[in-house]
Length: 291
Image (cartoon, rainbow, N blue to C red; front, side):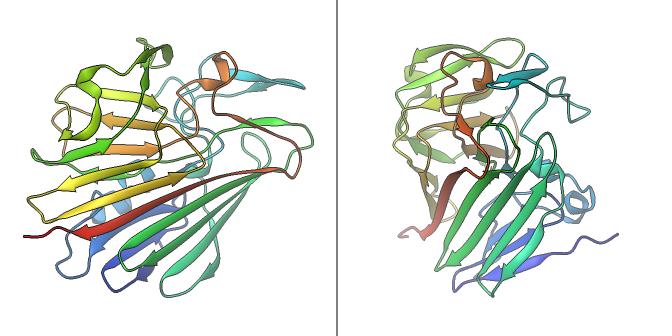
């Protein structure tokens, strides 16, 4: 069955969406020459029906992995089971694995919505806008259950990576992870992961949450003649995923570190009662570089 795509355009860029595939972004390209600004998705990636092979997807009602088979809420235990066949732990919430509905669309904007009962009742809403090369994503979750529960949000964009890709993103610390891929220790930012000035991405695996982020970053593609300036609201944390020898990396604005549900004070999580909401905004501005 062919996946329905929604296409948005502004004067500089074009964006395709697959609402039925977890509200995923499929391709975001420069209109002048079709150059991908997010990792490109070909026909095979789209046919797989797997958002992890596409360009970006929302993370609701949590980001990354949760250990312990679930987590405690003020009214009892919230059980969670593994939700993929490649991870032993539940990962990235449930919104990315469900079809969303289009509740509004124009030539340069769309509003997508999901009413979910898995693993508990919530409504997710994603507003997407293009404007002169600026891709704006506004993600909101509203708790629909009768008892309070913990929420986290995130966006999971995949960016093209070459040998010359540079990243600039300030932070003060980072959460290290153990063999179980769960946060084990917070440390002050090591020099090798200091991106306060533009620098090449590490050759070794990085899959960690960086803290005290002011919410702005740059991804610089000098050889391709452009940069992406990023700005987030609703969080001071990003997760950087750099798999070795791959042609992509992920720079993810997320509200909380990995396994925050089991960390002291549950950093970055929101305890929402019935009808309460939390929000995350992320803007990516395409900018041509002077030649």
